[in-house]
Length: 406
Image (cartoon, rainbow, N blue to C red; front, side, top):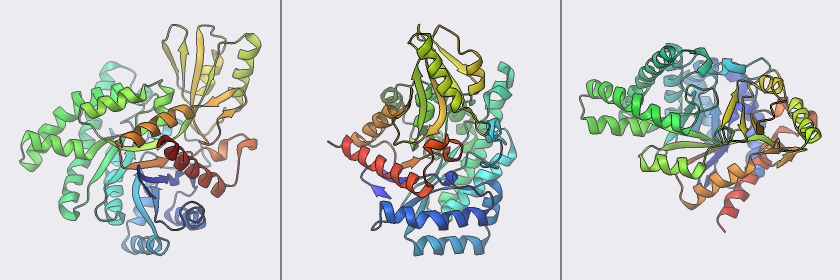
């Protein structure tokens, strides 16, 4: 829905169904009721997630026309897409496979260009569209410096093929679509600083040469295209796990003329480990209750001297739970926004409130998307009916934005 702070929605990766038929059935089941609960008198924005298989199916003319008609009847519109998970995302082990195929592959290029074509067909006139995507690759797949550099080069060159298509799509349709890279722990781009470093060291130099050659344009025009079509997806959960200074990174991006295409509104788990042995044991045991086998739950520990220790998954951190130098744990989980605490564990809700406060005072993006996708793997006592959960999250964000206004 359109708010004073931008278009707000939730990501439909929460709904199971990897084929378009199954996913469309889930949208039909849930979207009208959520719209009725949250904005009965306003158009409702959709954050669409399509697997590769679903995107191939939806691009067929009759399927796309059917979906367009359904959106019109139910007063809904699509303005953003999640192009990070390529394959299955429910009822199977995902873990680091969520990055595959990564940006070093042609499959990722073909998939993302297809998403862009679909989004251009669905996007209302006069509105920009965004597609969030992987932070190029998974860091642990490239263990040496030489392998990392090669991955950066290949991934950047492949991303530039998508930029070329987006420039052409704008010429053909008049619609601007940007790819929003989403740093996350253990991604090839892990944090704000690494995103900025990549932007200046790889994207602009390689992209400038590539676009100047492809479009016979000036260096200034090539850089303008890159800044328009390659932006940052600011996932609050991911940046909170990295202990980022939100105001500082937003200011850096603005000062350097790099745009934020989307805020993904999401919460991580955190807990202090400063207590006595009994209190620490209670915290570790509480984290253990959230250990499940489907998704990666990267954990970043902060030591008493301020250093950060990174663990690829929650079980790795649990093995070193006795490390007395550590004073805090933050884990990748995307827990419900409206829950402040889970016993001795807390959510990084203050980070969400801070970022939404920055957005309210001086908007830096037009797209706001809630991304809580762990409902199926949460402990039983935290599970609620799905439509109720989504509606509560949307209401909580609206209330938080209104509080920030006072």
